[in-house]
Length: 342
View 1: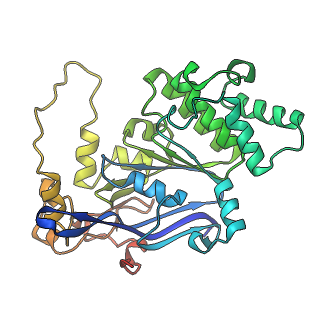
View 2: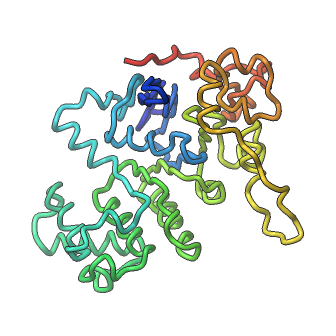
């Protein structure tokens, strides 16, 4: 097995939710999630799913914004909860973030150049102004921008695509090993998405930077993702090669998700309104079984007994969490001990 950059083992994040009558219950935002990103070659791992599936919770856990209820996140061979101050600073440098809102991350009182100067100062990246200037210009050129065009402007004077590419340049300048990109193209128009996705591919191929790409857009996942994990209510419904999973989905939820992507043909009509059970009903009724049970067209009695493990669909690491494939071998990750709340 190649050395791993990031390993997530049985990651579980529980929240306590107060309901009617003052009673509270635990809701799993993420449950027994496993993922491995090798050091080489660099890759783009996509985390996809609908709103509330646990995508952003995973990003926040990896970035250290919140903590696991149980499980482990291991970076470069060491669990991040055991990091001392120096190791934590190294982790912050090597694991960077690009967020969804390309405007909200800026301080509107400062010019764009302030973003880069703060990074250079905090991480002591250069020895003099000339070196700083060259470093900033190189980072901007990497994402298709030039210093004279953007550095003296305020954030509101730039387009959404420019602001997002500047965030990519800021992350690249630190020379990270992993960038957590949380919906980086969802708030820019379609004409700019391709340029940002192209930046991600070039940073992977030319700079050797891996990405944890959080998205609800299967089309962009298909364009740039090497591997994909499709989540449903905090659990992994299906995972594997992006092309295999989207071209040949096996989990009933993933099949519905892929089929819901509109076909660019006006002669193909949508099949009418989809009526779903209430979210609260879905979460409470499948507490001990498959969470997709109330919506599943292929549900069986066994689905209510326990959450199905990930079954190996083929030998190319394509896995699906569904009892329809109970005759297939269980993934080795699914055979790990279940995480328990602490």
